[in-house]
Amino acid sequence: MSAAKTMILAHRGASDARVENTLEAFSHAIERGADGVELDVQLSRDYEVMVFHDDDLRRLAGRHDRVETLTSRQLQRIRLWGGGRIPRLAELLERWPTDRWLNVELKPVADGHVLVERALAQLSGRPRVILSSFDPRLLLRARGLGSQYEHALLLAAESPPFLHAGGAKAYGCASVHLDHRLCTARVIEHHRAQGLEVGAWTVNDDARKRALVELGVTRLITDRP
Image (cartoon, rainbow, N blue to C red; front, side, top):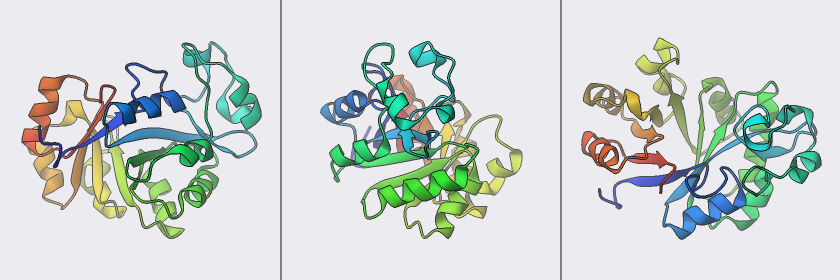
């Protein structure tokens, strides 16, 4: 696998060894030589951009609260299973080196337009940023607000067929990031023929990583950077 041709993005940080989407997971990804990290953003009740994947806190903190119902201060007081806490995007950006990539996934939340506006404002001027989402309307909104970043459409098996067929180009994206289980030679070639970069998530097996690179995947999103 050629490091010069393949971007390694640590999925929610180095989440095989640290609690996902925490500052510790992101720092550890750098220590392990990742080109960058993939992370998730959504809004707190007071409209702070928080770095967290799930809608609620059950899996990572044993609480039934939804992220959107708590303020940023309340969220940051919560200790996650295994240690660490939920960071604000602004905190990560204060520490993040400009020579490493940030793949910021915009979660499809109720106030998605506010999330896009606030995330873009905080990312403004930073190099090496990719914006991704399962909801192409959020990416379209970002472009309308002047985003010059690369946009990546996320695709899973349950994504609408029209998005698989040509949604990335239709919504002005430069890349697609696919569930790696969808990545056959035919599927990868379909997207590459449209001029798109192809990434795959979440790929943890070394043999599978090598096979995907041979098929033309240029970004690997992995728990094991």
